[in-house]
Length: 272
Ligand SMILES: O=P(O)(O)O[C@H]1[C@H](O)[C@@H](O)[C@H](O)[C@@H](O)[C@@H]1O
Ligand SMILES: [Mg+2]
Ligand SMILES: [Mg+2]
Image (cartoon, rainbow, N blue to C red; front, side, top):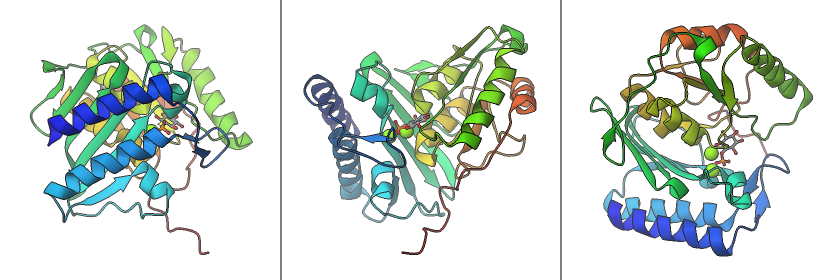
């Protein structure tokens, strides 16, 4: 099932990148884009999984956008971002990923991130390590943030308060100084870069559970850590995350972040 699904998705994304990168609609803001490929890939994944596991549940980015609940329960749940980096996809910027996390009892059991244009299949199973195209992954051993590259994203929220806090955090982190700041334009790819040891840490406020479910397992199985931006235990529904190679760097980043709390992914939908 999985090989067939992968081949279909790979072909679907590559053909769409060539022939149809049109924006179909926007969601939370004019720059929160959706394409037909986002929807077609998510439908293909859900259909393929349902055929084999009809009782399983799903949290899919585009299904939630269409009104499906975003509740992570103890049931076996597939957490899907069909195209992570949709803005990149629309612009043919080469970091476009498909991210699938599988959770039971609210714990990720395996995660897959396929970085389409790099043809890199990142995989992790809880307790069994993280891999890229079958090669084991290990986070960076760097303990000194002034010798690190940090990744972050600005998301699609342009509210003044949020932007002010994001740029205040960014300024403080840049001026530590760190050796570099990067934005792949995809949370999942940023987390794969942490798991691969290319980037020491990634943080973002504004992500969704589907952006980071698979990547969170890749990071921890590669020896890294996850932390809330205020230093506590990460909550994948809180829309805030730090994924780092070690606690030292994660705690250092916490000191510089002006945090805020977006509406949670599992917040009750506003009454109609
Ligand atoms: O491309 P998406 O699946 O929408 O995820 C993006 C998100 O749109 C953007 O706002 C975040 O900053 C990125 O980290 C996500 O990957
Ligand atoms: Mg995403
Ligand atoms: Mg997406």
